[in-house]
Amino acid sequence: MLPHRATSARVFLLSAVGVVMLAGCGGEAQRVADGKMIYGEHCSTCHQPDGEGYAQVYPNLAGNPIVRLPDPAPVLEIVTHGSASMPGFAAELSPSQIAEVVSYVRDAWGNDASPVSAAQSR
Image (cartoon, rainbow, N blue to C red; front, side, top):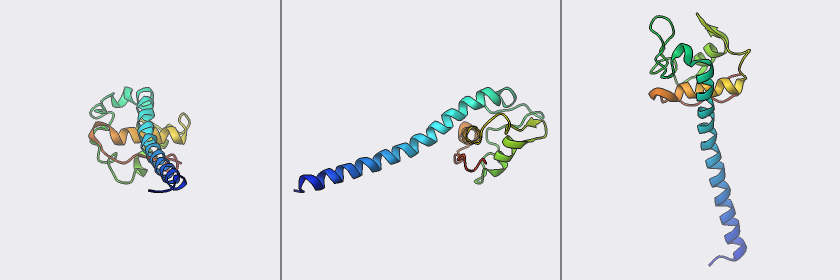
């Protein structure tokens, strides 16, 4: 049996590791949830709530190969600066909000791509 002090230290260490792990998971989940709200406010009119877009007008985001790339840079560039008829959102959304909406789009509709950090969207 371990002395009380050693047991307390071990319990504290395991608890701290658990909190850090949960915070990391919660951070990504929260980023995606926040991105869903931003998508609803700023993107769904053109790209539709289900990400299907409108043929020949606004691209389909569901299953879109650019959205699903391992490197999110092209999507971040489009959302930040715009492309063709899509406006850029750098003046309306912060880098954190851009990361959130891109994280949502990369996660939604079976896209299954990794989330994006605010640092990546700067």
